[in-house]
Every structure is written in structure tokens, then in C-alpha cells.
Amino acid sequence: MFKKIPERWRELSGQKNWKNLLDPLDLDLRRYLIHYGERAQATYDTFNDEVRSKYAGDSRYCPKDLFSKVGLSIANPFEYTATKYFYATSSIKVPECFILRSLSREAWNKESNWMGYVAVATDKGKAALGRRDILVAWRGTIQILEWASDFDFPLTPATKILGDTDSDADAAADADAAADDVDNIIPKVHSGFLSVYTSEDPRSEFNKSCAREQVLTEVQRLVDQYKEEEISITITGHSLGASLASLNAIDIAWNGYNKPCGTQSKQPCPVTAFVYASPRVGNFKFCNIANSIPSLHLLRIANLPDIVPKLPSKGYYSDLGQELLINNQLSKYMKYPGNVKSWHSLEGYLHGVAGMQGIKAPFKLAVKRDVALVNKHTSFLREKYLVPEAWWIMKNRGMVQLEEGSWQLEDHEKNCDSSDDES
Image (cartoon, rainbow, N blue to C red; front, side, top):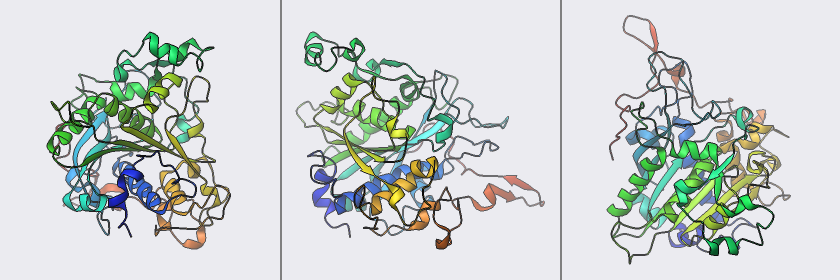
């Protein structure tokens, strides 16, 4: 089923910017996109969003158990080991669903949230993928109604990612495109996304360094560790996580974290971002710089009825990379016409990728993907398939009976509370 992926991985990871692969959607690329989408979905499936829990905002599962606990180990040749969890905070006010707060007085942390993981392909995974893949998955938010219209954040210079890029040559190169918009001469990004990516908080055990530094340090460590092998770096995320994944991929490629330390002559490994339901993150100048980085390739997967990929509106913002447009409203398996949640849901996106034959062509599943997954966190599968809604829940919602007979909320694996997870 996946025999061609090891020999085609460079093409599937965007070496030719997915030329002739998107329409019609290449079968191997379809499987590839589902694979990386599932790794982003894992961040939702382990995230504790129960505000009554003292572990709200953290991962339920430890790195060593992550992929088995979220259902990505059985009958899956793409095997990875999670090597690092990372955490984020924000120095500016952002929507509450960006940084979830526990109601408990004994909260594990009041400033930070678990934001994703870094992983690396095992030997088995390397054989299935064709190279040693270093994976970064950023957690998003599916609570679209709480933040989709809340984009009242000013653009801010992208110096924390790009450094000082202002020069007469750069300005002249973009003069025609930005003649009527002085603001577009300086690369800028959404200040809310940048804050989550780059904020630190000395009060937090988990954010004495920002999410950016945590990820870059681990990626560099893995690049150095596997410098004698053929490697790639793949970044993925959905919604808010997609915007952060975009910033992270650009950061890695622009600043050379895709090369081993102290090896100026060695070619950088390819960096690919697969981002699902991503809002726009930067202005024309920022996107123009990002799109010109030779080792970086970014594919945005957008669902036609989903509003988030259309936000913030064009004008001050531009689009990154290439776009694959799907339409899960065409699925005969999902309730029609759906709503903003079904259009934005990551499982809804992956269902769309599995069966899309074209924006207006009849929907037909081209790969084996269980339709029950549509209802994992929602209720958008048609009733005739007899799949319970929002079925991805812990047993008894995490309530455990103690020896004396009382019940207590225990929804978090022990020994996962260190900011210095095992590698």
C-alpha cells in the first residue's frame, strides 16, 4: 500500500512544489497528507481540555506512550518516537482557547499550555518513509467560534524569526508589488501567533524558554545526531497549530537549523510544512521571503467552506506556499450541509483528503480510512453509520474509584510533569 513512498518522498515533500500532484490528487500524496494530518490530530487526542482537571492544558499521555495511546501504532508502518514535549505561553492577551486555564487551585501550571511534540522516525519508520524524518507537530484549537472573528491583532515585525532583513536591494525588489503599501516593505507577522511562538515566562517551569527555543534546540539536537543519515524535517499543525507550524518551518529553514552544527559545506536537509486549515500569518514581504527559501516547501490544505483559511482577510496579509483545496461537503458520509465546526475539524479535513476527487467531482474514498474517525470529537457522520458522536473520551471521563469507594478525577499519566522530558 505504501511501497512507493520511500522512493518518492522528496517529490511528495515538495521538491518540485507538488507540480502535477494536486489536481488530480496523487494517490501517494493523499496517503502522505493523511499520515502527517494524523500526527497533528494526535495533539488533540492527548490534550486535556477538561477545565475541572488540575491538568487542564497539558498532555494526558507521556512521550513514550503517546502514539500507542492515540491509536497510531497498530497497523501503521510510519513509526516514530516522541523525543520532546514543548510548551507555550503568551505575553499579550490572546483568546482563552489559545491558552487553556484549569479551574483547580492545584493546577499543574497557571501560565503555560502543552503545545506539541518533536518526534523522530524509528528504523522501521525510516524504512517506510525512505529517510530519517524529524517531525514537529503543533497543537491547535478547534473552538472556532471563540476565535475565528477575533483577529484584532496588529502586524508586528518578524525580526524574532528573520532578523534584520531590511535593505535597499530587498526594498527595490518588492517596489512594484508594494508601491502603494509602505507597510509591506518590512516583513511582518500576526502578533498573536508570534507571541505564542516566542513568549517566555520566568514564573513557569515550562516556559523559562519560549516554545520556539524549545523546538529549535531539539530539532538541532536530532539533526546533529543523525547527520550521517539522509534526513528531513516535517512540520505539521491544524488551525492555530498550522499558523505556528508555518512560523516554525520558516524559522528552521531561514536560520539553518536544518544543517548539522559546524558543517558549513553540508547541504541543508529539506524542510516541509503540511498545514491544515491555516489562517494567514504574515504580510506580502514576509511571505515573499518565506516562499523564496530554497530548502523550504509549504503546502496549505484548505476546505472550501471553512472560513479560517480566509482569515485574516487579504490586504495586509498574503498566502504562503502552495494550496490544496478540498471540499468535504461533497462527502456522502457526512451530514449536509454541515456547519463551521464540521468544515474546520481536522478529522473532517482528513476525511476530505481521503475521498476528494476534485472540487466539484463526486466524492469517493480513494484510500482505506475509517469513516468512524469523522465522529471522533464531533457528530457530523450520518446517523445510518451507527457511530456514537464524540466517542474519543477517557473511560468514565477520567474518574477513578478509590479503594475506600469514593471517586476521583485522575486523567493524567504520572511522571509527565517535568519540563525536561526524556529524549
